[in-house]
Image (cartoon, rainbow over all chains, first blue to last red; front, side, top):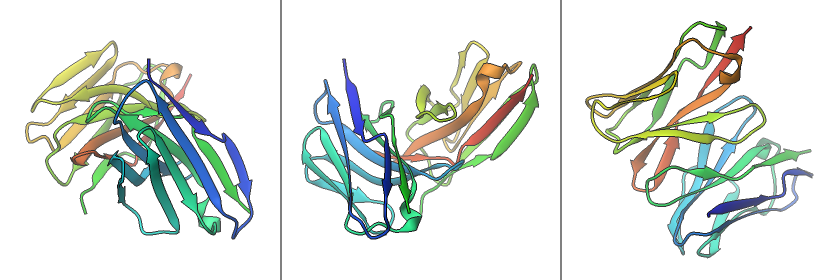
Length: 111
Length: 110
């Protein structure tokens, strides 16, 4: 069966520090991968999505970047965090345009 | 840009009352999906609608996809406290780009 791993679950980082969040999927090949951010009590903002290795679509101009070094690995990064980067970060995968499966999420607090 | 809008943002109901959330897209969608997120949790898939005018039911939940494939609704009959959470619609606004509505936060008072 397919599983998605996202870590860490909680993260507190100072302003200006770098960020690296990792997401891996098991049990499937060539998944579509996604990074979303959710502010407290708000909706899901699509940050990046990838329909294949080397294909990253960025939805929101910001100081975040994403990479897909392997078929089932999706990494969200930042060189210098801002206070406004705080939020709940969710990774998800899909097979084509079917249902999305989400990781447990990372609660990032930038202080 | 292409957007998926969802209303209302909040809905407070008494247990036993009905609840409806509406979703509208600025463009035609190939499909619409609905998710539920419990407080503190991650979104969990409920259902996907593909056909124009499609209606699907899951126990007390009824999902509809509009004829033009631009709007959808989720209706819950006789809400229960277990229905509490945020309900999201989502659609592929282009291939692979799964865009979510803002969600409707449902509170059920016993």
